[in-house]
Image (cartoon, rainbow, N blue to C red; front, side, top):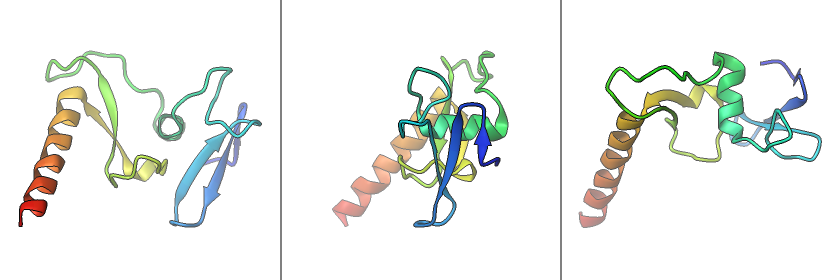
Length: 104
């Protein structure tokens, strides 16, 4: 990933390794005058824009999922493009696993 790109910069944070923050001059994640989610900027800098095409499973939209389950992580390797339906299922599975672990 380039260190400088049209109006924003990529800042590598070494703890944990390969975590990135994409900031404007004010320190906010952005590529325009309007703040954006840093994980979306990171994913789009590597993969291009999130598709606006209809989802094959009939979901409302495409979403980005943190496979590392760390919402503050913006490492593009940890972010997957999923449909809304897949995203809901992934989080339902996670909640079920947490409930099961608490019950044990």
